Structures are given as C-alpha cells and as structure tokens.
Length: 248
Image 1: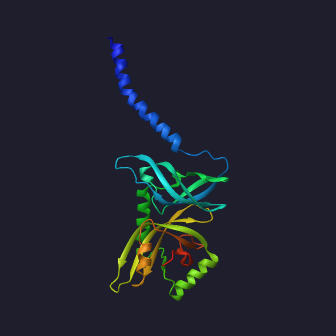
Image 2 (image 1 turned 90 degrees about the vertical axis):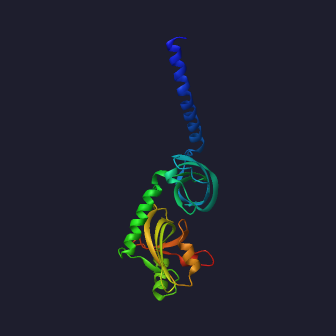
Image 3 (image 1 turned 90 degrees about the horizontal axis):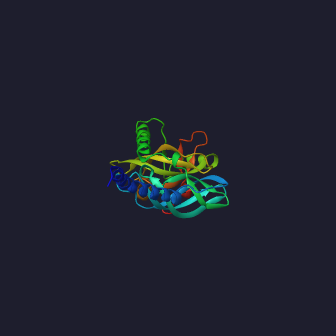
C-alpha cells in the first residue's frame, strides 16, 4: 500500500465521524429550526411545560414544549411542539418568551431567542434589583392583600389608568418576621399585554401571617401572574388582584 493510500484511509477514518455528526446536526436544524413566515405578527408564549434540560456540559439540545400563545388577534392558543435551544437559554415553566407567529396560522411561530437573556445574566440582574429594593432605592412595596386603604386605592388607580401585563418571578428573597408576617423581594420579568418588549423589575411584597397561600404562590421562581403597570413608570407594577387564581 502506498503512502498516499495510507494517508487517504486515515483522513477518511478521521473525517467520516465529523461529517456524520455535522450532517445529523444539519438535519435536526432543518427540522427544529425557524419556521418560514409570510405574514409575521409579534406576540408572546407562556411556557406551561417543557422537557428536561440537557446534562451538564451539553451546549444545546432539542426540547418538547407546551404553552399558551397570545398576541394581536389571539387571546390564547394552546401549542405543542419540538424545538432546539441553547442550554443557557433553556425555557422553564412560567416563563414568557417573545415570539413571532403567522397571522393566518398562529400555531406556526418562532421564538425570538436573541431577545432572551441567559439564565446567568437574568439571575445577576434580578439579584442587583432585589438588593436595591431591600436597600430602599426604587421602592415598590405594596400590600398584596389589598386590605389596607392605601393598597386598595393604588390597585384601583392602576386598574383605571395603568397598563396590563404578565409577570414571571425570576428570583426570590423572603424573610419571616417574629410576628409571623413576612416580606419577599421578588425579581420579575414583565411582559406588557400591548406587545411592548419584556423587561426586568422588582417588587417587595408584605404578607400577613394568615396570607400563607398567597405567600407560597408569589414566593416561587417561575410563578406567573397578571399585573397592572404604572403608565408613567413601567418599573412600578402591582399584582392584578381581581385576576389572580382562585383561592388567593
């Protein structure tokens, strides 16, 4: 066997696995990659359930997701299907993702991954925001029960003049007081219902001793709830008390 033949055999044995992996990756991308849209509309996708993220060390993988899509002309559409995502941006239940969808067929949609921060970046922002709240800067503390006159008046004012949206809890720092009451500094990802881009803010909530159900609901990363947004200062938000889940 000549030297050239030997070199050729070695190259084939080395390159063949690489080409096979690249080909499989291309086929996965073709199947799970972006959908071609002819009349795209911007909206949002609330993640209800998603398959487990890949093991440590795996940069990206395919997933199966269930969610509720909404946007102009679509109040809520249950969707189910596969996709492909980076491990650092793996979707989680309760998260609201920016999407574009086909106007005539909303079940055809693409997630706008470039607008989604990695988990590490979102966590750092939430931590900084909560630190500012707890230090008394940018105060946004509310009575979530609506039982006090101040809490009720603020809720009614935002309901009349504010904007509506959805908030997902991205971080929690809860403290229990000696009298059984508690307060929690929450990092929130807020998605306005009017289609404006999602943004991060924080909220400090005080709970009475008897408000255990509400405390457990809000103090959970991934919890999603409707909010009222101050029209003049979007960082100021309040849970929409009239549209919380039953029992709260």
